[in-house]
Image (tube, rainbow, N blue to C red; front, side, top):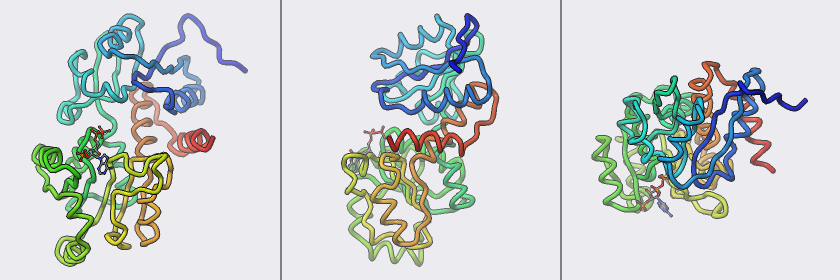
Length: 285
Ligand code: ATR
């Protein structure tokens, strides 16, 4: 039966540009229906996040997901920002508390929670993050929060060094990371690589034959995570799996950050497996 929309139906939304390929509306509406919540979740592709925030206030939108390219810009228009989001410099979730707009970031824990399920505690582990953009920042703060030993690996030196300095991590040029399997084998003895996380878009559809990591680096003791979820099993994850590594796909992070958002929106714990099944059916279309 079609959902009953009434004058009291609440509104949740995602703001971004583009949002046409987002699977968030499908997942959040499925969860709202599943728990019988009188609300809908809609996608708005906008050019000006200031106007987006005005819309949240004017229309009384209860909560919003914020995506590319507005995660940084939105901060100055909100009333209060959670400490972690301030450190990351990015907000991906807005909660409307009776007109008071509070922003936070669920990307950070969204990355570390599935990682901890695969790798156990991150404390003291050598974690190599590939990339130094916005996604890398959120993941880097998550890893630091969990007391992992962080190394930022990036193609460009300036961007990589700048993020490394900010999160108090080491920096390694991507070229050196990939070119030196002798370095990696010496690390196997003295400085093992425990975890590798790709935060770049390398390997994303249509460039599915690309990987940011030289496969010779992988060994069976490593956990390898990709934040790319299209395709679900990227070349990097295939290479890692062939070497016996445990792998964590990008859908895991997407699901965990979305589940955390749903909990903030409604106070209800979201069923991860159901979310993943719905996302997979959509992605396979
Ligand atoms: P986002 O905010 O989504 O993370 P971004 O700020 O554009 O995106 O950052 C993209 C990151 O992916 C950068 O660290 C970039 O490396 P550079 O600093 O050298 O540009 C990295 N990246 C993108 N394409 C890459 C490629 N083909 N090979 C290696 N790194 C790449």
